[in-house]
Image (cartoon, rainbow, N blue to C red; front, side, top):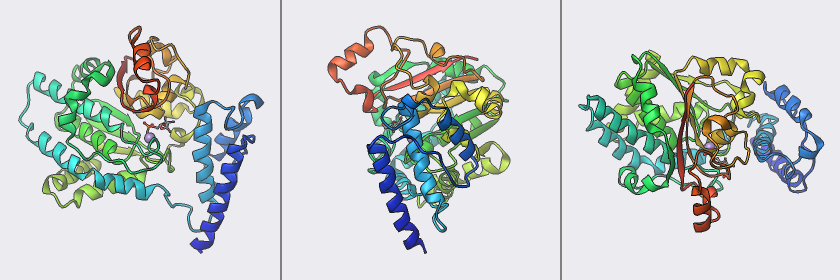
Length: 377
Ligand SMILES: O=P(O)(O)OC[C@H]1O[C@](O)(CO)[C@@H](O)[C@@H]1O
Ligand SMILES: [Mn+2]
């Protein structure tokens, strides 16, 4: 049965490719997914001048493509719930095991650190590891497996010059000035190494009593190749628990335990994260998501796509402030940890972007540079 389904899938993907390449008007979706109506009302609201792959806002065009692929699988009898990117995500996870071990061992050595200064230093390192974890995504490499296979710590010092905006201190103040009875949200991006660094940062905040709960918001459907789905999240915790190396098994058990005690929570059925809307539209389009983020003391938006949604995929002047570029989106304190893979960025010093362009005109597409940006409530 699946063989027949696969033939249909291949045929439908060819049709979709043809529609996109020949710049046909976006089609309405059919099928039974619960976000279909929302998507269709969005597509109907697009003006004719921005309603095809090459004429639409890039954010809309890309999201539409991934949503159409989902619809093709959803139509089948046997492949409805098949994650067509799962194998690549698992392979990328396996390829990063050495880095996971090094990271875990290094942080196990710091268990004794207690002073505010020591904790701040660890936080700083974890935020950097987390930022660079975003370098590794499978959409930018066209699905080719890229894993973190070297020593992530050794790389940190050399990467300092690639951080174009650094609000780590403001993030630390935001978290450490509380009594620790706070919720911190991750709006997750990629599975594999990046998710591992999210989990480590979450573990640090819980185990050092800096936060009472960490919530992970993930995608409901396969998205931009490597983005985390609920299955990826669960699989990751299980794979860590079953790892050959004892240090990883201990970490896996601790993280799974957080799920049981409610210190970690997976928010898994929110379609807004795979909608085409930018975040300034969240409060009016999906107030329940906005209200949910308001419960958190800090929301950490991971990665490039989330950054584009924060900024409305607008080509801002690169010296515009991060706060202004959010255009009123401020459910709570928020920050972005993002490597630059798309041609928009704000919060840079005057002349910085020009200098980088002179060195490499494609610097915004490589993921080599990163920003750590914070906006208070
Ligand atoms: O996983 P991330 O950091 O959101 O990156 C995804 C990015 O990859 C691309 O699909 C290709 O570079 C961008 O359009 C998108 O913003
Ligand atoms: Mn991604």
